[in-house]
Image 1 (cartoon, rainbow, N blue to C red):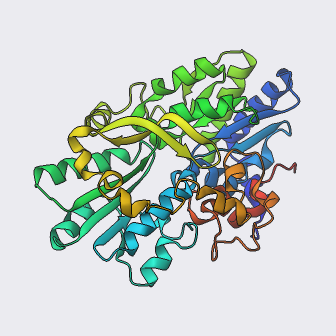
Image 2 (cartoon, helix red, strand yellow):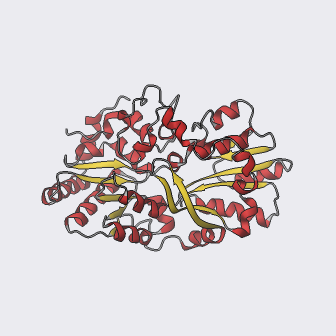
Image 3 (cartoon, rainbow, N blue to C red):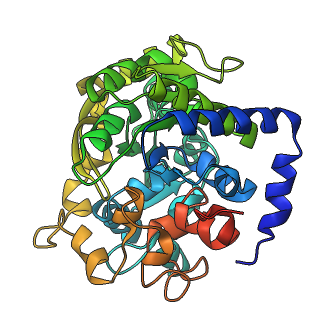
Amino acid sequence: MNFNLEQYSKKINKSGAAGKLLESITRLCEKIDKDRINLMEVCGTHTHEIFKSGVKAILPKKIRLRSGPGCPVCVTPDSYIDGAINLAKDKNFIVTTFGDMLKVPGASSSLKAEQNAGADVRVVYSPEETLDIAKQNPEKNVVFLSVGFETTVPASAFLIKAAEAQELKNIYIYEANKTVPEAILAIAKHPQVKIDGFILPGHVSVIIGVDAYKPAAAASAIPGAVCGFEYIDILLAINSLLTLIYEKRPEVVNDYPRVVTAAGNRAAQSVIAEVFEACDAEWRGIGVIPGTGLRLREKYNKYSAAEKFADIIRPAGSGAGRIEDQAVKNGCRCGEVLLSLIEPPECPMFAAACNPVNPVGPCMVSSEGVCAAYYKYGAAGADIEL
């Protein structure tokens, strides 16, 4: 957790463009009649860049950058993790997953622990790899853990369409994809969360477009700014948000026009809409948010592991659906961290019982998790003055 904060903050200050943005940010802060301005990023990549670069340390004291639920692994509830573990334990299954899911703890185990115990759990870099695994193992049920925001959903949709075209009978996905705009509105309306502006995710926005956030901004009267992933991009978004706050304009601006458009990727949206439909979804730390989940449409429902293998995923008498309580019993406060109600060091397990080698909660497991960022970069992410 050692970090040379001065080195990074000086590096930013020496940048001509950054210096000009900081001057503008400082002027706007002086004009805004608030003791504190809370800005929340909802993207794990933004979180890590903020911590790594030391952006927080060079901002005016009244600005507070808060890390929201921008890590899809982190917001996946324990009940889903345990369902995936139950599938992995069954010798008739091969479970494929992105690497971040391996070490996320469930109620009493993890996919990594089950893999070490002999379960056939395989890390893939693309859902498409699951096709070859299914072809090579026709006697096994092959299940891909479809976890992620809109960025990764098209790949899951293409996997299902390919399975249909190739008439594969042993391939399934276990759905846990989530959508961002409605979640932002839920955060904005949360009684304990006080946010003045949202730094919106670049990768997700490539798919859904800037216009997708406008209803949430209008309904909450909170502005947003889509931006890229360098510290200069984040400073640009902060400057835009302060401008909107000062001018009392709850709008969404695009500070990433080199990649993001107003309408987004129409082809990706089309394949998502063809294969998936909206449903309610549980978010760790927030609860159930209506319309933020994605499940397979009836045409493709035969590929849903949740439907096909419900008795394995949630066996009778397991208490499934309330397994989230186990994390609370263990002392994990990831839910509060995800809503920025507390900072990671305020969790008594942080850097002690919970660390990257022995993570207790998903915010420490995932490469995009805020606890992992705080642990790695330490003071770089703190709200302090130079």
